[in-house]
Figure 1 (cartoon, rainbow, N blue to C red):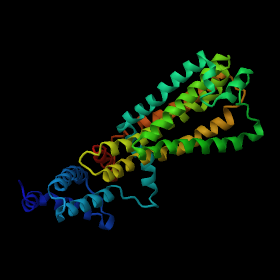
Figure 2 (figure 1 turned 60 degrees about the vertical axis):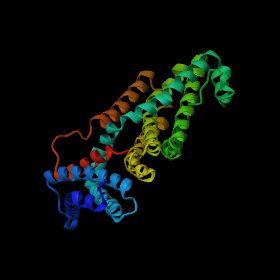
Figure 3 (figure 1 turned 60 degrees about the horizontal axis):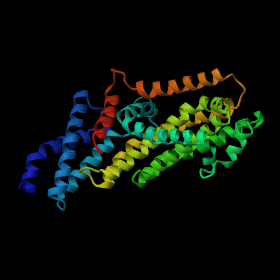
Figure 4 (figure 1 turned 90 degrees about the vertical axis):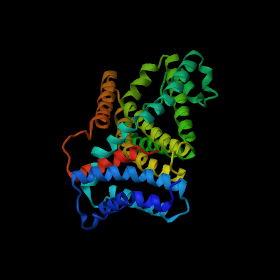
Length: 335
């Protein structure tokens, strides 16, 4: 078995080189493209060194040194001054959509956790509206049974309603995200219960012949609103998976790394939900033709998905851009 001294001699050169690259931060020196790629290679290699050191030399100074070196490297990669407006813009134009694409599997799982209960709830309520009672939807059933809806917001109340809707939607999204701390179980609960209830409401509307009226209200803002809930739920599932499957890391370190990625998705949810809330409060209650409501939903949703799926794919980047993108790539390989 390799001793700690032998391990240090074998890998010390790479550690010193990474330390030298990180120390170049003094004076805000920018790395060259080649140095950025070297930084990424060394970061991944020394992450493996730390895992081995924790296993074989848990109580020796080499483990503490490697942990501190990687912590400094991570801080260097993500360095961002509060007054650096370019870095702020870069986060929204590149890092967030790039992270969304890299972790889209979690988004799809969150979508399934919502959609499957929604379909079940829809079918149950459409066939037997009595299921509204155990789901706490008695009031909604009574309104729909009278061939009315609760979506007719008076014009003078719409700004206040829009603010309330935004706040409520942000709260639900944050619950989906924060629920990941409970090993992802609360995120799953929020997605499943919201899917079941929304599906049941639509099923009740269909049963009483009010489906078109309710769908006309929902479709304008629903594409963005529901998509953001799936994004927040997927971010929460990332946290939960990091706790369930930390790999070579401690659960604390795995959760910390997952949180740095997931929190960016949660941050993106806020402005998107503000847009959805404005549409829901000011446009959705209007008497505009059904086709116009559909058009607003498709256009707003299409713009959102174009941003998430296409933004940040430019081929020409300066060295500062490459540092940020390398950070995203390096950490996407960890739990």
